[in-house]
Image (cartoon, rainbow, N blue to C red; front, top):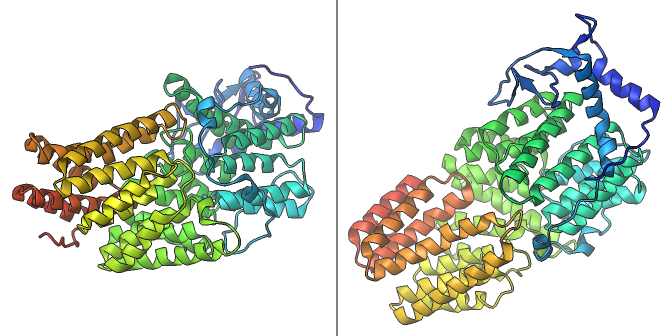
Length: 586
């Protein structure tokens, strides 16, 4: 990549050197020890290596759980100079070639329209208070920037973008607001706009419009997007590791920055696009450290909910979910996340109350002129609220909510999946003709996912009606729509991973049902049992709760096929998923 240096004002360079060298004592003329401010981070002591990363005996330190390891070392002068370069590299590397969006990402429909993302907005309350000091002389720009990062940590991409735009209307040179827009637009599937704002942030950094630390933030997110857009494999893995190393350098620059620790937790996910949902054991320590530094950083609480839920530690997840919901009472997702973990503690009614609260907040939000199609969260909350109602025996209320989710307009790649719960509801309640009509209508949607789901459920309904010739025709449609979906997202940095998921969740159960009703019932039985066992192992609420009723449908399929022992085995799996649930087939 091309590079061009920029002049660093002497006072900034001296300040950078002071950050690195303050408190140093020399043990030999050529060696310096790490200053206390840079060495001690809570229970962690860190030091620079030639890579500028946090290490111990040439190995990186990764916090695990609620504690961190310790290490210290002397730094030669040349290593100190490398550390100074770390401080200034953010400004120097900002003139790299502009980041570009791969062609495969250009064809994916954006989730939210450009006009909505740029609408003026007022300062809000009830969304959770976060503060990150940025370079601006405008108090209002700073306030809107803070509002933007608050929405980012609640996955409120629309309102985050609107807040960052408001910050720029008050200070057009606020580089960090462009960085915020890059992150909001990326998560709203508006990849080209995301890259445009990231490149603009880099330009402002190169012009000296921000501090070296802010330039480092910009360089880090640019590195993250390079990793995201890189082809899967060794190149992406290398860039992902570089992204993590760069955040380590940011933490070394300012160990007390809770925001940097939170970002480092995000980076521990298996993909470079990680934003807090996929955390596990390795991410916990980073989020816990952020809370040690700032006990009010509810963004860390939010991500700990996901991480502990992924690990099956539901008591800990509920503790952080309650903190998050309390800190952001006006955010639908904050209330929704508390509902995520309560059912695993046997608190289905409390979970439903939280989902209803999230629903009320969403409906109030939509009265302000934002259509439900613009917001990714709408279908998701309706789905889980309908599942909760169904689990509590409120079938009619579940019917209403799941039908509302089915009727939502579809735009983005992910949107089509929310039609499925209604089709599954109809199949589970043996309303096969109505399921056929709905499944066929789904195949006229613009979304490849919606068409695929519609074809799968049509085939299942026809099998249940013993209309095998038509079922085989529907099966051919399934293959066609799956191929269309593969073509649409193959090579995509975010959505390609869903190919395998849909194969497992949709194609394999359908093939098992054909085998069960056809000439290989033993294979069908084995496949359905294996699928049910997978649902038993699910940790997150979405898959676990959906799996409860999916496995019950498998039991219904077994009953209709006259496979009594299989039906009993599947009902036993229901107890594994939710011991308090009594199937109507028992």
